[in-house]
Image (cartoon, rainbow, N blue to C red; front, side, top):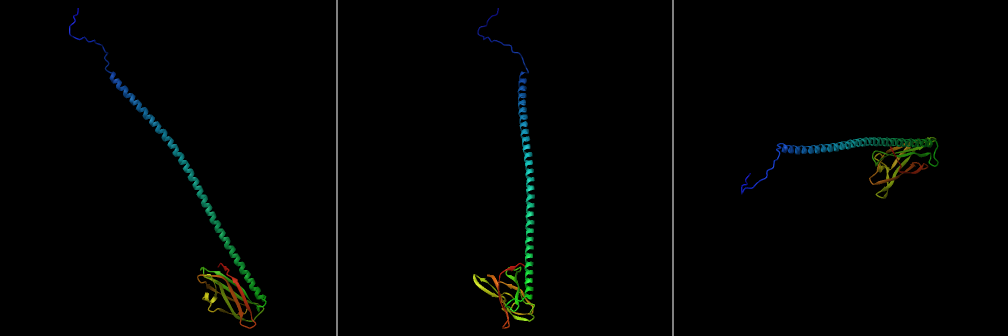
Length: 247
C-alpha cells in the first residue's frame, strides 16, 4: 500500500510518440511549395512575355509590310510625277518648236509678200509718184533691248530708166518721260551723219543699219519722207507703226 507523502505536488504524465523527421518534412514541403509557386509564376511570366513578343513581332511584320507597300506606292507616284513632268517638258518644248516654226513661216511669208510688192513696184509704176515708191520697210530686234536693225528699200518702176536723185528723211516718233518726242535717224544711228539720206538709184536703193533708242524713250512709229531733187519729181510721205520683227 502506497503511502502519500505530505507536502509534494503530483504531476500527470503523457506519452508522446517520437517522430524525428516531421520537422524536416515540413520544411521540405514548404520549400517545394515555394519552388512550385515560383516556377509557376516564372513560366506564367515567360508565357506572357512570349505571347507579348509574338504579338509585337506580328505588329512589326505588319508595319513592315505596310511600309513596303507605302514605299512601293510612293515610288510609283514618283515615277508617274517624273513621267508627267517629262511629258510636260516635252510638250512645252514641242509647243515652243511649233511656235518658232510658225514665227519663221510668218516671217518667210512676210518676206515673200515684200518681194512680190517689190517686183510689182518695179513692173507697175505708182500713180502720182513718178514711178518711185517704198518697196520695203522693217525694224528688227537685236540682242540689245534698246538696239534695233532697220531696213528701207526705195524703188522705181522698171519701165523707167532714168536715174532717180533726191533724199529721204527717217524720223522715230514717240514719248520721252511722258512728253511727245521726235528723233531723226542721224541722232540714233552712228551710220547716218545727216538728217537727209541721199538717194541716187536707177531701179532700187537699200538703206539699212542699226539705231539705238535713248533711255526713257518709248517709240510709237516711224515717219518716212522721200523727195526728189527735181521740180517735177516725187514727194512721198509714209508713217509706220513701231512693229518690231524677231531677228
